[in-house]
Length: 148
Image (cartoon, rainbow, N blue to C red; front, side, top):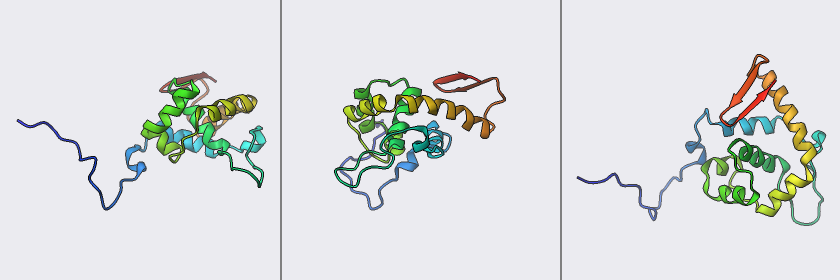
């Protein structure tokens, strides 16, 4: 009897697989992406939404917010662990479009935008209400429960 074999890692394919093929339509990362995409980050107070013309361009705050929310929902709070996850987690590769910010960038984002992140929590409630995701009692996602 033979074992089930995986694909040859050195095999060259004519058509590379898309990351979107690995993320199911009901995956929570799609909700995170839609939620952050619906926010007006500059009105919430996020820094570097519009960046200077000179120097190296920064990561967009929306991408770092997606990473922060993903980490919160999956109980990955350490900036160093989030950095590791961006390199090995397919959901994060899809969510961040293969961006891999380092731990210092993630930590600085949290420090510089803590008040704006608090406002996002309030916006989350309004977003869920607009989408009719709850009736005013309790909303629960796989790793988050919030009293409304």
